[in-house]
Length: 544
Image (cartoon, rainbow, N blue to C red; front, side, top):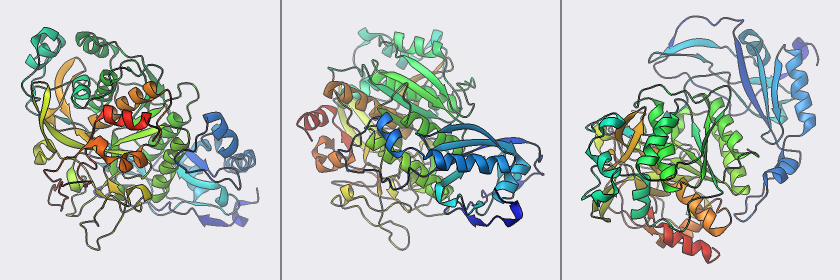
């Protein structure tokens, strides 16, 4: 390439990043410190991804038609070499080139000012403003991720604060009852239920186990203990699912030994999905909690030609305002690709109600749940009498127990399949009309939560984090029974809303932010409502 002083640099569109509120600069970065970034590239020139709901391709067909152009990759490699950066990986199907180099080399190559910051005890590398790239490669670059490695997302689970915690050798009453099938049906959900019991209450198909399907779980920290899974599933007399961990960007299954850590999220996801679809394989993709790690994990799962997941469950997220536009657009592209590949994406809608943890008195929605190409999963509070549901309302336990996320997206417009759902304008000033969140809902209140075993301790957990793997398990059951993957479900669900049991009571106002109220039809608390699994299967069997 030409001498650096003669290269014309331009701004990378949508790459502007703001400082993290409350972050404090804490010294300079070592210019020799090594780091890695991911550069995502455009698809082959002239190609446009088919977005018709029935458009389907194999992963191999997609890679051949829409993967990165090798000529573009060669340009990026030349750019890297000219700036003392090393090519770590290229993946044409994912359209990514991973580069490594020193902090000084990265700052020079992309004209960014990287500094060290501290926020709530976490030390991270941060940038503000936009990324600059040479004009010659600008048309081929969609996003550059990893220059900034602040935490991007949080897990959406809530421990029941009053729950007894015990070792497997001294289980509290709710797990004693679960581990003893002769104990009979419980009188209420307050003692914690398993994913299998919730699936029964929601009429999930019983003729399938998810055999032949793979459920992908995206995790941004923590880990699971195989012994916990052995104890949990064998104690419930449920076949132990085949669970494998997949390392992304050098992050592995790393249990912290504390149920309140990310271990609680990881294990909850596995135990819920595994209880609903014990015949399905579960692949857990571990990645760093950064925008780079999050997107790398999703792109890896979507394009994984070894494990070939048919459904991806994501229980991590953050308010839309905390994301750069390049990151939301890049992740949403992979959700669009998933639809073409027949892969369903289930995302938790958040656990901090209409506020979504921002605290500015306005309503916010969580991303990635706000993507119009995912099944956004909200939360309810479930009451059970014997073996039947006696009532189900919007989950809103206030600051103590959390509340379901939901609202109107500021980033994504109203999708065509949601046009007839009477999605209201945003409650924020200006009344913006956008994608409504969530699409569906399920039990999420820790007061009616899930009995889990984490780090050798048994407890009750709620949160929309449980709802995403719950629906992922349902998708695996449907896929097996239909003999095909259902893929992107939203158009079918909105066209056949009767497959959902409407939730009409409650609201998600939270932390001083205006909220939304439940009512007949779609609402920004529980979406269409709670899916009846058998009713949905019948609709899909009819060819819809």
